[in-house]
Amino acid sequence: MGDHLAATRAATQDRTARARALLATADMATLAAAAEARRGATRPVEPPAERYQPAALPAGYRVLATDGSDIEPDRHGPALCYVLNLGWAVIEYGAAPHAELGNAPRLYYRPEDLYVRDGGRQAPIQGSRLGAKRSVSEMQRLAELADAPATVPRVALSDGLLLFGAYWEGPEGFVRDYFIAQFKAALEQLQARDVPVAGYISRPRGADVMGLLRLDPRHQAECARCAGQSPTGECALEGLADRLLFDDLAPGERSALFESRTLAQHYPPELLPRFFYLNVGREVARVELPAWAAERSELVARVQAVLVDQCQRGQGYPVALARAHEQAVVSTGDRQRFQELVARALVARGLPDRPSEKRAAKLARAV
Ligand SMILES: [Zn+2]
Image (cartoon, rainbow, N blue to C red; front, side):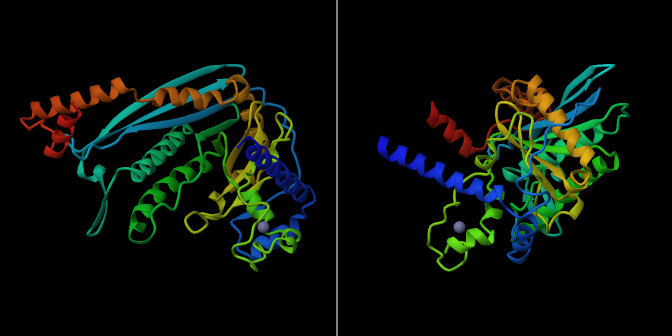
């Protein structure tokens, strides 16, 4: 097994070296044309092999960050409801440093909170739909935080991919449209306030740039699989993550910008995510910006410099996102208190606080 692992590692190193050589000599116009012709999901925005040093940090800056957590509705509990707990952090550095941390837990129990409805159709808000509700609430809160006036440059941060998307196709399209409309409105509000919003992805697993390189005519010439001649053939670039291409970035340095068009059907062009990889000191992270912000070099430079500074202050992770996360966490104790409060509220209204029979049977078995 040890031999096998060593062989696998050597093969991965070899394949990574080949991918890097392809990137180092890639021609932007050729890649862009190949992506266009093959309807590739990723487009180059800057010369793909280019690297960019961080700009000087502004004398002062303000960072806005939100994060959220939830208590899922318990279909077998005494009452149908769920909780979203939004946490946020506003931290300003410079001449007048200050910080505001907060959280707002909110209980949702009205019919219009529990279901997405469209004519005769309805879908309960739980699982991935509750995840979407949380993403929307986090972005709405970021937009509210951007309403406060500022005398220093600002950056808004959200944890994870910038846009959420296509979980619900087919009959659930109305669910997607319902959430995406609200999410877009919040993103547009940030744009109207001229605040660049960045999605920060720690330990990124994406392979979008690898996917782009697979369309390079030089790769196609030697890969029957990618050239479409052998659907079962082996591709040397398959299964390699983008971060392998960029783990030789110097500290503070970023990669070129690329655009992801995966969600182009659902979002306007100015909101489509453009991303770069960034060496934040302890790792190579992925950073996504809406196209409108990524088109302005001063905003890209600001986001890069601010994130490098935030990660230095936060031991490898943006300090504002870490503070927002701490505010959003729902502990086991909180969950228990929540169940008790729900039960008490029901009793106070003369309603039965007994769980459903199915749940009662499960509880009995557990003891
Ligand atoms: Zn291939």
